[in-house]
Amino acid sequence: MSILDHSSLVFQQTKNFSKNDFAIFDAQGTQVAHVETGGSTLGRMFAGARELNLFDGPGRPLLQVKDQANIGRDKMDIFDPHGQQIGRLVKRFAFFKTRITIEVLGEELELDGNPFGFNFQILGPQGQMGVVAREWSGGMNALTGKSTYSLDLAEWTNHSQRMAIIGGVLALDLIREKQERNS
Picture: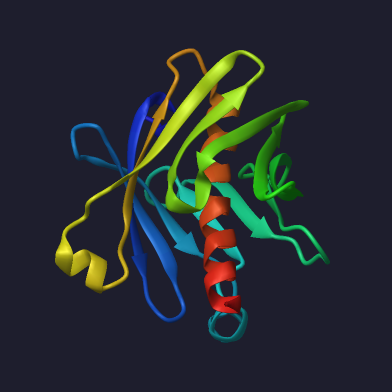
């Protein structure tokens, strides 16, 4: 069964100096996917993580998120396993707040709420497509830089939308890490 067949996912983040990996679990606590930090170790040490690769099981790449070098607003591109772009997360500046959108299949999805606190909804033209909520991962995990959050997807979302939403949630973590590094 693919990660795309699950409506409820839990992301367990593992951070250290040069990696930003994840284990992804279903609602029953079974690991269904994992994320590995891409790029060179030296590059990650100086610039931080700029690429994440999601595997739908051992040796089965599903998507890749890349931080595209640009000036101004952050843009993270989301690619399928064949290298075709399927979406883009864009951080935009609006009056007194940051607006974050995911562009997928000609639609613009909005992350509404507190995206950098990992408590938000994903809204599209058809309504609420998903909800992300930070979860308590325990004191020891918090001390070692591990955070946990859940993603609940609307049952009616298709695989392409789910790939872009999952990629967008991972891209958001890259933006958050970049902000922490630059502050």
